[in-house]
Amino acid sequence: MAQTLQGYITQVRYLLHDAQSNFYTNDQLTGYINSARERVVRDTGCLRTVQVSQTPCTPVAGGANPVIWSSGLTVATNDYVFSNVFIYKVVSGGVLSSVSPPYPSATYVYPPSTPFTDGTATLQYAGPCEIINYACLPSGLLTLDVLNINVYWGNSRIPLRYLPWTQFNAQLRYWQNNVSRPVAFSIFGQSQIYVGPVPDQAYVIDLDTVILPTTMVNLSDTDTINDPYDTVVQFYAAHLAKYYEQSFGEAEIYLQQYKQKTQAVLTSTFTRRIPDPYSTPF
View 1 (cartoon, rainbow, N blue to C red):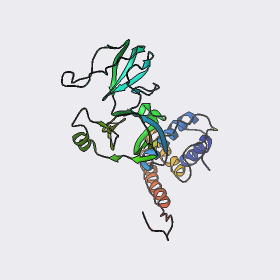
View 2: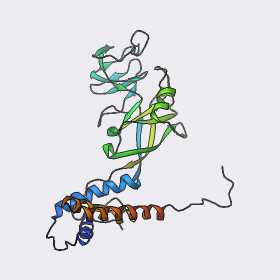
View 3: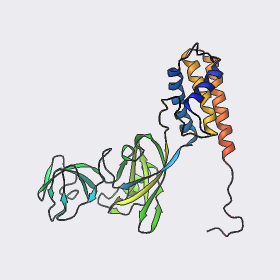
View 4: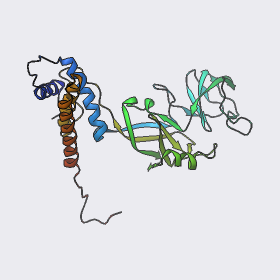
């Protein structure tokens, strides 16, 4: 059964020999507990969820996903459209022209820096089609890591290959106008996903992700971290409390206890699974 904030506070008070609340307030311990919960997820990856999105994806959090540019399409202000490798924001609604934006090309290598007219609409460069920002995913900046990405193509769910950034950049970003169904992804920096080749149409994707826990505020709040991972939260919270009061020796003891018990949890949950011992593997 998942812990409540009150349950965590009680556990930490017992570790700190402060059952009567003589040394620490609930607010102090709540802060340490929330920090500890984030540390547990970073160390174990225990909170995973599949997020559904699109590529090309909206370049801003909360924005509408872009639609592919097409001749005569009616667009409204603040819509997004994508053409070739760039996403554009509609700054003035209207009807798109019969000729797509000429970016990039031999003449216009870089995206436009100012708004330009396309038919009766006015467009402004908003970002490249190859980037998916963590902030624009359903879980937003709670997204800690992306483990796998599937692209939906007809009745197929196609897993993308992961490539380290240097290899991805060399192999899949060489030709700027290369647009097709994506085959690989890479993580750049702290919060950006690159897909390559650049999508030639809008593809639904699902992302296997590790997410950070939401902050617990009320004593009755129930944690999203379940047993056995929630059993180690108290030790890291106690470590932070003792470090705060400069009892460094005790803080180190709690930190070592946290590490040992976290390793024990990981060991106990890594069990083998045999789908069918009599079947022939694919």
